[in-house]
Length: 182
Image 1 (cartoon, rainbow, N blue to C red):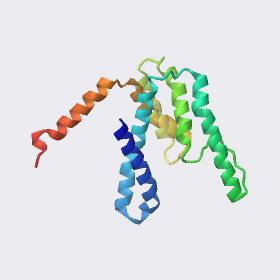
Image 2: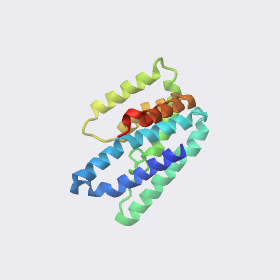
Image 3: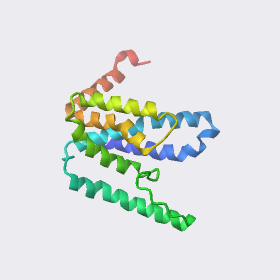
Image 4: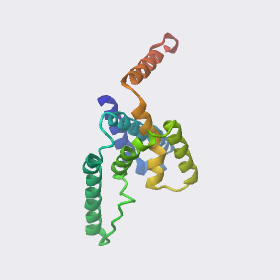
């Protein structure tokens, strides 16, 4: 898991570094699109996987560990923006681009126990995600991002360690199969 997290974090850095240049080269654009097509859903999945051991219904802990740091860093960002532009904009609902994950994680942990009370909650989360994505085509909002990625969080909470070992062994078996050797 640590190796996977390292790879994903490296992909975030690579994506952010080459992102400004992707319009200059079609291969860079394809690389950025490729990176962003899976690395954030994988982070969300891992967040769900590692969140199931923690008690997500402990609201005080959620507030202290996620919401308070989120508000603090939004305020810090806004102070920095004020120093540079002399405009004070405090918008807790539309965070700076790099803080959306803290707010999302807080909300995913907050609503996942509620979703678990619904029959077929994973399917329901996928339907909500697709509905939000289809309604928000061409728009980009924090709510769209939170709800569209929520099924990956739910899937992470559903998967067990044995599920991941089985998937890992099947992937390794597929890559080491004699028919794949050149």
